[in-house]
Length: 349
Image 1 (cartoon, rainbow, N blue to C red):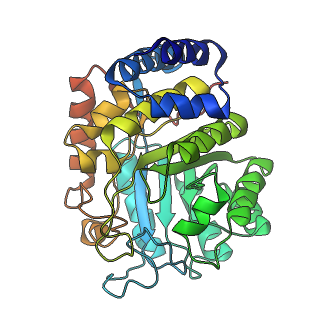
Image 2: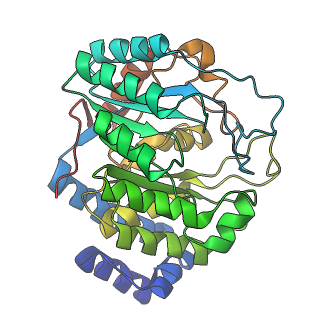
Image 3: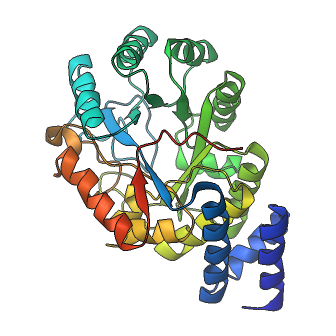
């Protein structure tokens, strides 16, 4: 590790910010020694805020029908080999009830941008969840919607909203998405969510096509300025039915390196160790926690549909029952000295 890298890490730990060029330099000069020092600082600062707690969120993939045609996504509308499904309200509520009985207190409803899930439909589901389980948090991850839609969902009781920005560089965004999708609209959505009082999550892919250290540095600067309540990053993993099928996956090492940096940029952030990390390496999620992450998201979706929600190839945990998923993660987290907690884990500022 050269002296400039060490100095940048020390300053990031102390001041929680660097310049765009300094983030870029840190990424371009990544080494095992630098990663180790970053992880040590990231774990220390996370322990000061959250102890050894890893927050668990119950993920419910409500449907894989999507109007969008993102070039990297396995459920893009042009993929005619995708077996489409849409959960009923009854199925979604059954997933929540089962999750609640297993100890989950935060539920994440995630799906493609599907007109069926109108404000009326989603608001009705949120109200029923909150009525049955008033001590729970409801997180939505349903893509871009008008401000008035976000406002209606918030009024119905939604607490959090996850919307990955995917990349903070407009030109890069346009290389990953079809022309009808707008970088400016994605950013507008994030601003609207924040203004409406949601706890807001953003995030990006690590190692996506055309990405360089410059784009990653811009992502880090965006996170520094936006200060998301949650930030989901994971390695890009190609899907065989997309234009990027032959692109290489992102790496575990760079993803963990960036997890540590994000923890130091904004110490209270809720930072998932993603399923994609576990997909590219058997101990990927554990490595993410050891780099500074503090959230895991077991799948509560019906087992019959899990393989259909295939955003990328070889996704793990597609055949496990909900109880198995939770038990497996608890064992894995204990093996590295951490405890799964069901606390809704609201950000501590």
